[in-house]
Image (cartoon, rainbow, N blue to C red):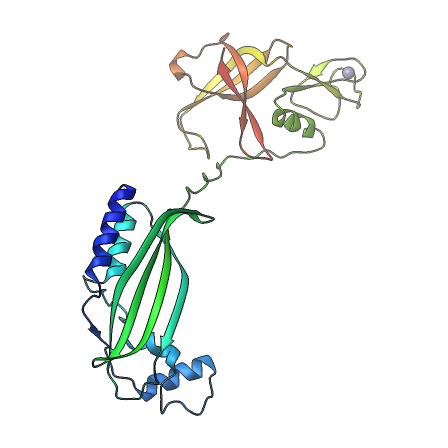
Length: 293
Ligand code: ZN
């Protein structure tokens, strides 16, 4: 719905003026006054002989399951803005004016009118429209109180995408460099500080010479499928079935496991050329995966 259609609907509702008076379910009564003043801790001895003025809205509440009348202008404007995508609401202003005290036995009615609809405005909550109504309470023909009430009907921002549900690796002293590398877009392969042999997965000791002083090199990220499985069952968090798990031999000579993405499982074969894909899950975790090259 366009801005123009919203403005036209608002003009029509403003021009319609007051809705029909709606009679309160009950007259002003002492039990309700007592409950209210007790709940608010208001010990003013003037009550309940007269009702607290700030209670005025209480007398004409719709009640549990009550329906707004069809000609209620706030209800009508709310429906129009809901339809246009401005589905959230927050009250922004309320000012009440009291002309006199109400006494038990007086039976109130309320009518309301739309006074203006302003927008669309950019707000911290989102783009929206300020909708202002004025309600008037009367006893018979005598107005006894008024309320200006303004709400912001706004379009809620899109929620952030939910975090991806993946199996998270355990990171330890031996493997921390590997995961830190992935986060920086590097495929790091452990290298013996003594004999220079490359090895993967990372470990504390060189399987060739027994040295415990590893460093690492950054691999090119290119390799080919050495072996693979097509996983059909059971389901795995963050994966859609079936998926391919490939053991890839890097051009540097070591083998690294990862999911092979965007490929028909029937097309996968030993020797298929692949390249590393850095799958950033969040600030803490990037997983290695493979794609065709
Ligand atoms: Zn070594």
